[in-house]
Length: 195
Length: 97
Image (tube, rainbow over all chains, first blue to last red; front, side, top):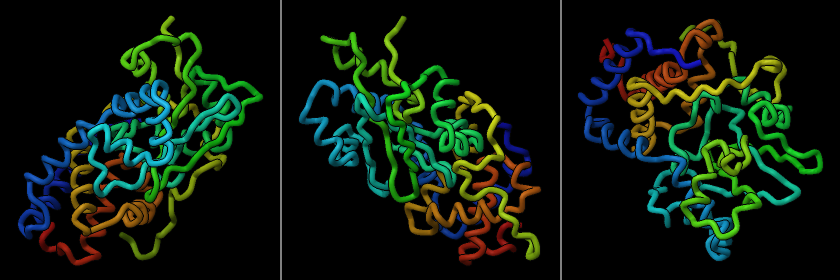
């Protein structure tokens, strides 16, 4: 669970930052700009990419070939970020992403990783029993659909391109993007039509 | 860091049984101000070539188990970043007092 940082940790951070500032290693302006950039990143970018892929075959092909270029076409700076790969779901295969080693996550197109993605239980269980985890979270996967769990690493980040749900014929990009939540982009949930 | 206790608390935990039967909780709370500042510091140091993600993880995994589980996610990051900056001679112990 997320607990508040201790006062001693906050003091430790400020001592370290002060030493780095004094030596000119970093500046407060750089830290503020970095935080603002991370705060701006949100799953809405990933959702928009998916909605466009459901509507535009050329965009879809480009995104599957080069996720980094697709993110940049959405106005996201990928400079210094690891490459982004897009995992294409089919009627017979669904993908889920995890970082078994720590918490590598496609931050540029999804924002900060949520606590559960970093949790010991998600990281250990989704590898061994992904169907159970998905069922517990309300998205059971049919037995005849292969479930492929993909490790996101320091060197390569992934997002999922799910199947477009039936019953969305004629929907606009905005309507479709609204179905694509962060959990859908991680693959731990499937897109659902509003009840 | 102690020279005698290098027990890695958590390394590659994909599939291990220790956390089976533990539900994945929907903990959606965004990082607090402390976490966001540690996060920004880590990214800035990485962008400027002072550390890598792999080094961060090695530093996190070197935290002895008894302490590891008492620390929050971003407190572990901070421990690792400080260790790396000391190891690399970017800052000295005296400068952190």
